[in-house]
Image (spheres, rainbow, N blue to C red):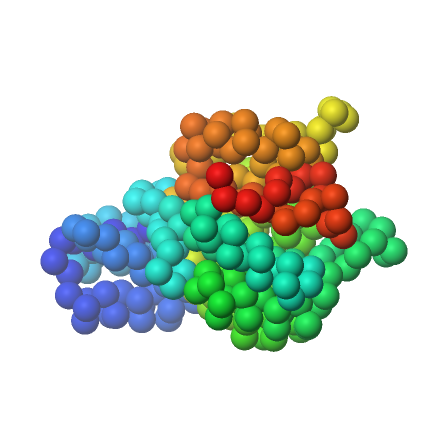
Length: 307
């Protein structure tokens, strides 16, 4: 349910409403807007009629049900687009190689550096990332360039160590419905980059975001990275329909990853521009100083050189 407070409601009144919601067995999530405060009450639908009694409070303007199955991600709760701040940035393999890439992408205008210390691979024999050592290299790249770091976390028991080094925790496509992991990154409090699964509907994707939001972490960034279809000429099918669709349904920011979405570096520029035209809040571009030597994703990586 959504509890809309009257304009000018005091902090004491907001706290009182939240206390009443908690006493009814629901979790309150307060969203302060420019003109008024909205409180989302999330919990078992069977007891929602009890929440209507809050309409009798002087400070409450209305109590209405949230119609979407994803509650906190819905525009019904927050109409204004969410902005996620990572350091000074707002979002609405080897040591020399990593540092070289970091310097070049910063010079080219990049705002955040993404590196895969832990890499989920279809084959157990493929390169799996540098793991803990990779985290240390990413931290060094951050010190050298000042760029915030985003890297993937794959297991709940690895969240703490990854969060020590990363500014943004990435949930990859294969883990988009790993619910214990989603809860754990929600508890960590760091911004979360949530990639769409290769066979995940938009509603399922937003419900995965809901797992993070429901733990009290409002800083979720979505990323469209392509879905699996019958088409074989590209790695995946980059579903740019998802950008305006998500914008209509949710207040969460959304990025587009044309590198994974196409799997071919020569298509990246065109699809990056198409993603921006569709309304994406940002792009994730795979780069490498020497793509032909890359241990992973070399075909989708343009050379990391300033334009």
